[in-house]
Length: 331
Image (cartoon, rainbow, N blue to C red; front, side, top):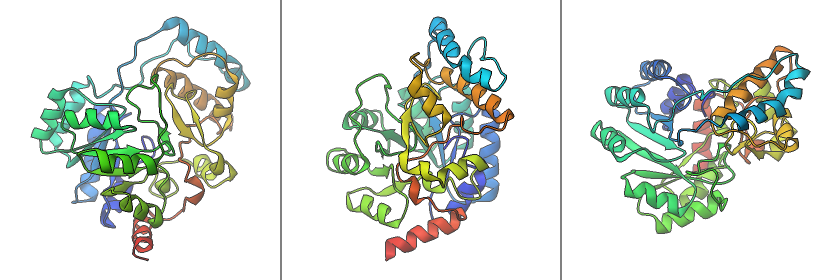
């Protein structure tokens, strides 16, 4: 939910009885500190902060140049040039000492990890600070790795989920387990509590996850259309359109597999033969192309992440959505 979640949304979810979350994975330390402070100002209840734990990328100048060249016609369409070089646009928590220091100082109640696991020293430091640790996993092997390092609960991310696939190694074989199968597998075979994630949009979905043995469900796409979300008008319109029925997995936007609403960027990714650079280096080019297109009134190059449950999205305040889901569960 990086770029979409807000302190206002987290606080509204908290007020309605859920566990609100803010995404700090793409944030620098100053922005992260400001988001934590604003969330605390809006709610006295515990909330979750989410971090990206991807392997720090190695620059590959020839591959990056080839990717920019492959995108050149798309840039030219909007009167722009691709970047001359690409940057690593944000750090991984794997080696972000400043972010670790911030979390130790701020002591958020819950810290969730996506894309992998940090070193044992960082996990020990967060636990010493009193943080409950969650980690996204997409397989039993990843779940066992998380258990070995002391993660407190497992977020079972099914292949249906919107946004970036949480696989620890994006270049390894992915069994693409769905939420139903993965949740049940971990509930039976893993040793930590399981939180189901992926394609869950309403009370029936949450109830199904609990019936499978999960202790909770994590929803993302369900909250994109809420007024507290930071999604722009084009993203909201696409979510409510026909494309919501046809989400696609793409690497073209960021360099890492992610489920997105079909748009001009996902279509471009299917046509281009060049291989995207490593994540998040490729995202530098993706964001530049999106900015060039938006400057000319085209909004189809955004990272419009959404899960396969997108057609069930509802536009209502986040607190009302939580209360509606709870009511659906009771019924």
